[in-house]
Image (tube, rainbow, N blue to C red; front, side, top):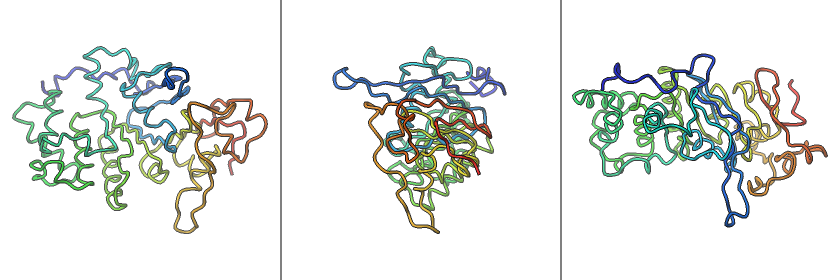
Length: 332
């Protein structure tokens, strides 16, 4: 089936008014201790992703970022709430809808090498999704593989190599090429530059940014690095213990954070002109034993008595920013 004969995209209903993804009060709970307790990995998450938008999902390890991505992709079922793709519930897809969703929403794994079949050459890895989704005639597949390699900056002879013969940076580029092979509308990348040399990270970030802008892709980039978020994404969502505590335009959030947690993450970010300081004391509490009231209060220098009683909801501030804090920081 050639591209012009492909069925309309699942999110064809996603007009300028309707986001590609809409997360409506999404919860994810895991039973632990033989079912006697629950671990609340996600707790009332509301989030949207519009066509062509780039969104950074930021937070410490254990904040729920990867779980949120897995629920968005339908790899984990939400315990409560809804995940909509266009106007359709991801949890209610039939087999045909699931297959089309898998083509339109591509996932780049953090462990890029582990996500590639070691028995297949790079050319076979890239050809597989093209054939699976019938995106080209058989005679055109080889040409499409060469085109994908060019797009991600790899030489044509890479197609004959196995993943074990590639460097870490090359493997990440192959993972990006495989995501593009599906001709997706959305790319979800989970810590896709973690563990690489700084120069290789910069090359991959430039690649992702250019591809996202040139092809008009929507992107969700999971990271703990605010520097990466600032460079790559136009909007940022900061997570803490399964909740979004601050969302908004990246430049506005990083210029003047309103939530103390966002401010603490920024102060902990290394700078050449200042010594590294530990501005966020203590460890993130267990999702199985959340503090009463505001879940960040046990680490917050601005916490007061009402923070122990009231669990703050997200409220709208200037520049379209949502902040879940009883005593947000003031803007300059």
